[in-house]
Length: 298
Figure 1 (cartoon, rainbow, N blue to C red):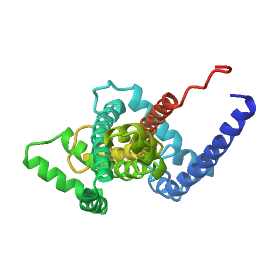
Figure 2: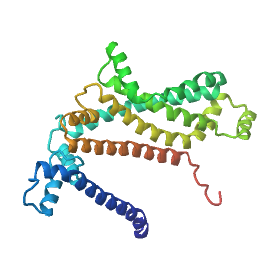
Figure 3: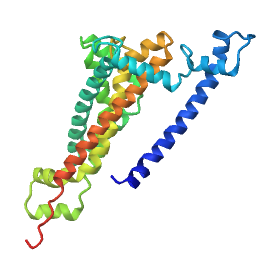
Figure 4: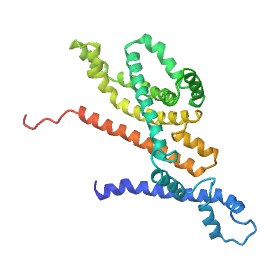
C-alpha cells in the first residue's frame, strides 16, 4: 500500500477516533463531576478545577467511565488473571464465542436448507415463508426466557439454550438472502441449462449456488453479529457463571460500570474478529471461483 493510499485510509479513521475520544472525555467529565464533588471532594471545600478534573477521571464507579479507565480494566482482565479465572476476559469471551459459533453454524445451515426448499417448491414457499418472517417479529428478549424454561424442563442447560437462541437469530438473514440469491439467475441462463439436459440438482450446484454467493456472504456477516447478540442475551436470564453476558449482569449488580464497558468493548472486538473471518472466507471462495486468466497466444 502506497503512502498516499495509507493516508487516505488511515487518516480519516484516526481523525474520527480522535473526535470520539475528545467527546467521550468531555461527556465523562460532565456526567461524573457532580458525583465527584458530592462523594470525593468536599462540596464547600477549597478545591480547584484541576483537582476536580483529576478526581473525576480517576473516580471509582463513575456514571460514564473515561476511555483510559476502560482500557486499564481491559488490560487487567486480559493479562492479570489466569485464563480459567472468573475475572479473566479470555474465559468470558471464549464461552460466548463458542455459543455464537455453534449457533451461527446451525442457523446458517438451517437458513440454506430452508432457502433451497423454498426456491424449489412453491407450496413450501407459501407454507414456510410467512412463518419465517413472523418468527422474527418477536423480540429475542421475550423469546429467551421461554426457550430457557422449555429447554430447562427437558434437562438442557448451559450451552444448549444459548446455541438455540443464537440459531433463532442467525437463520433469518441467511434464508432471505439465499432465496434472493438462488433466484438471481436469469431465465435465459436457466433455459440454457435446460438445453444441456441439466437436472435440477446440476442447475442448483452449477448455476444457482454460485449466483447466490454474493448474496450469501453479506447475510452471513449479519447472522454472525446477530448470533453474538443472541448468545449474550441468552446469558443474561440464566445466571450463567461465565460469558460476556454473565459478566455484564454481575457487573451491573455491583454497579461496576468500568467492567460493564470493558465487557461491551470485548464483545465488539469479538464481533469484529468473527465477521472479519467471514470476510476473509468470502475473498478466498470468490478468488477460487474466479476463472483463471487465459494465456496470451493460447
